[in-house]
Length: 315
Image 1 (cartoon, rainbow, N blue to C red):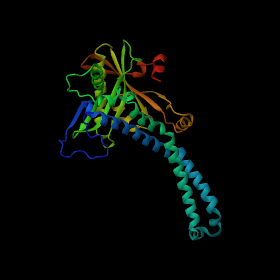
Image 2 (cartoon, helix red, strand yellow):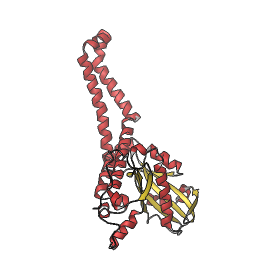
Image 3 (tube, rainbow, N blue to C red):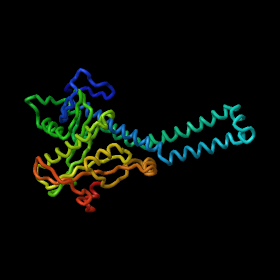
Image 4 (cartoon, helix red, strand yellow):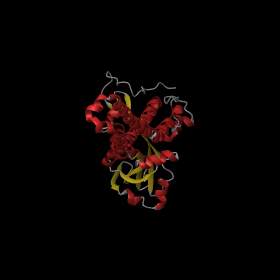
């Protein structure tokens, strides 16, 4: 395996390295870092989804109602007889109520984790099958020496596919990435379509503007892949409905929400996620192509893909 760049997301940046931000394609030495950034992204959105469930009005009201009912059932008679003073003299009863409230609250935390396990599973699956995100096997890429003069055909193909992933490095440490893949099913002579399959950024840099730069690169890269063949390019991305930060970023880059779809999971989790209104949103941006180096005029993507056939393929 080629020596890997520091892939730990918990370590501090190298203060001795120059404070420069560099963008580069995915290379063999960045394989582990790319994997970690993608996994970390999915775990962060699981945390966001879990928090949305716990603080959802349904959860809050359920906790308040059950806690109030139990408190009245346990403390009501004490209050009627001796008021707050009698309750204060029987603190063990108050402790019982507090334990109940803690238990109910914990139940919703556990419930949130259970419902969002499908997101964590997706992160874990990247380790087993990195092609889902990067369109290539990272374990195979990691052993390639790009400077070798005797690269076989499969190694060359892997290095070419790696160019569809862009990584941001600050102080020589990978901090963010984006990965795109052509959609053969959705592309035709009129439209060239790619999907953003991988996305990741260290949480501390989520509001730095780096993500916007990577999204700009995805548009540029899509146009390069199109190579003036289609008059319009489309970039699509699946976003969890609770990921408001990413949606704000996409809106800044003129992306539009196209449709919603349910998260594919077992029936119990599916019911729970629907109850809390958590789904996958399809976002996209459509642009006219003038030439390989110039893109202009954001299109109304909903008008561009209004055919039922296209909508079904997105789903």
